[in-house]
Image 1 (tube, rainbow over the protein chains, first blue to last red):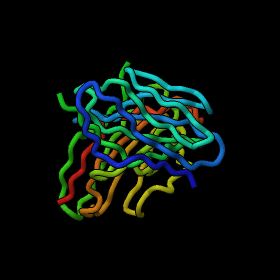
Image 2 (cartoon, rainbow over the protein chains, first blue to last red):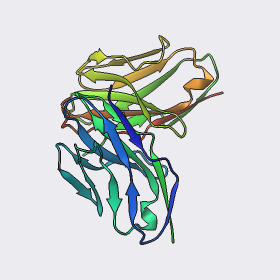
Image 3 (cartoon, rainbow over the protein chains, first blue to last red):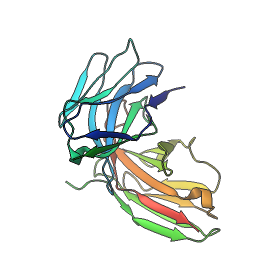
Length: 110
Length: 115
């Protein structure tokens, strides 16, 4: 069945550091891929998405590229800020329901 | 416009009691989903509605869990005879359609604590 694996956290970085959060998936067919973010005390928000191979999703300085050959959708940001501290979830969409990874907590220190 | 809303935001109950959790989806969204998020874990799919029918109930953990939806509007998730392992955040999401391209929009969740 479909599944998502993302790197375990927590990830602790200094402000302006480079961020990578790894996400790999197993799926039949051609799912859409998503990154959601959950800020402290808030609900899940869509961060970015990609709907087909080689698509790059981007938002708020974050990027992720849908790599079919490596079945990956790694999240990157060139320079993180304290305000990026949150839990990040990778997800894939099959016909309707989402399959989520377990989440990666990011803490950015000033 | 208004997003997905859920009520209550927090619910504390005693083991064995029944609870009802409510979700108001974004107006016009035909699809509605319930997920459960246990502490420190990812989201588990519970049930999906297309309109007021539920084609997939495969994620409901036991027969103590049930859900209904009125038309393309409000949904209620009911947990009967609650157990401590039911403690979690229950998230509702809605989307305009049900294809893989449709983004799901999440509510803030209901935090359920079973004592």
